[in-house]
Length: 344
Image (cartoon, rainbow, N blue to C red; front, side):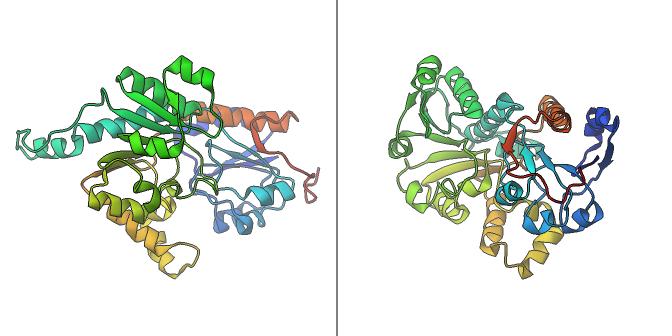
């Protein structure tokens, strides 16, 4: 069985080494795309990170494919419908570090509340004065948490440690959890109206796309702070820029942006001018965000600690091993039919 690990980093190789026992495993530094799919058309199992785009045109080039083991919790980079129809199982990493991402939420928030980027830049220039760098306390502020899954729950735990009041919204409210952690569930209009800080912790779905838009920003407190470590398309970028410019949103901490692979690869960004599948207005808006002084942006690195990366790799190895042994686990797509092109 041929296993191809795309977006492979040297630190991951040792963890995947046990899979070489009886299997052929190939490490590829590049993401899975049309070109790399052609080069590995005989792969039966692939593992990718979020910068691969496993759409229909790519997957059609891999007729023997039986399993996609994504090294992420989210799977919006994979054509789930195609996989279900063609007998391709998809396994994810449902939990690798709720504490890791939640800590990053507060890294972004503290960078904003204590004006850290400006303060560091000033100190490095030798201008050792706090004048004009006044921030704000977290204690006593209201945090609105949208999504109370594993990460959202850990965000709430940390917020309570900072003595913040917490309001939360989730499509599946859990009163017992609210009592245990000391927060209150509410509807979105109330959360928008009362929160001083809003943290997004929901997946990318059709119903969550642009959940923060011009219409929802208008319902928020003046001077609200927005933190997004989930997915870039949860926020209408152009509406966010307008809200930041008007002062409706005082600041934003963002670990994710729409069209991240294009921003990540400048050459691809230039080529996208001639590509209809990407919205160039979003790309330009994202670059505006990167240069705004009241925005703190990190490059989708909330997951990136030694411990979390190791947990991701270990879970992925177990997902692949379990599938090969006929006991698949952590499936987000269970194949409807056997792969008609498989030789087995």
